[in-house]
Length: 142
Ligand SMILES: *[C@@H]1O[C@H](CO)[C@@H](O)[C@H](O)[C@H]1NC(C)=O
Ligand SMILES: *[C@@H]1O[C@H](CO)[C@@H](O)[C@H](O)[C@H]1NC(C)=O
Ligand SMILES: *[C@@H]1O[C@H](CO)[C@@H](O)[C@H](O)[C@H]1NC(C)=O
Image (cartoon, protein in one colour):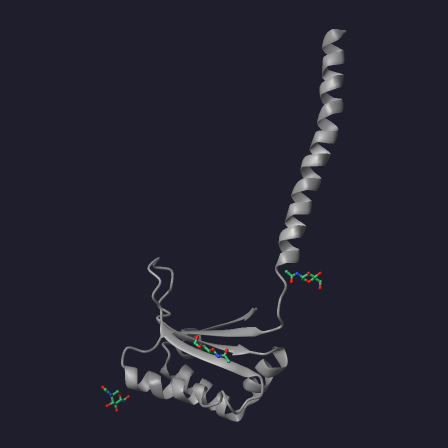
């Protein structure tokens, strides 16, 4: 009898405790989400596995074509080029890359449709190992 009461008491206590624990974790998770508000900007990230015969001068010539579009495409904010400096061995051979920041998705789309960008894109693919497979593109919302 006392044993049954004990079990009942424990279960009665456990139910509100579980509800409390669940609601606190849901609340803290939604608080975290609220803190992170997207600005609408896009960081267009391009990572490249260049063919071994592509030297630094060739790379600069390609990057220059991208950089030259900065002041010509409305909403194209910034271009940054560089080599991978990560040491975890997770780069899968994508040793070079660049990012372009855009004011919004519309600016990113103007860039994608721009004829000079498409020309620069074609030279990147031509300089990459296995063509399109040697280029990795990821557009991150900021
Ligand atoms: C995020 O956006 C919401 C809704 O517009 C706003 O209430 C909140 O204050 C914003 N948070 C930050 C950290 O800007
Ligand atoms: C880089 O390679 C190009 C051919 O792709 C060649 O014309 C140029 O002389 C090379 N530059 C250097 C610095 O090796
Ligand atoms: C572009 O990036 C450079 C270097 O990080 C920075 O100094 C500059 O303020 C940036 N320009 C814009 C328009 O975001």
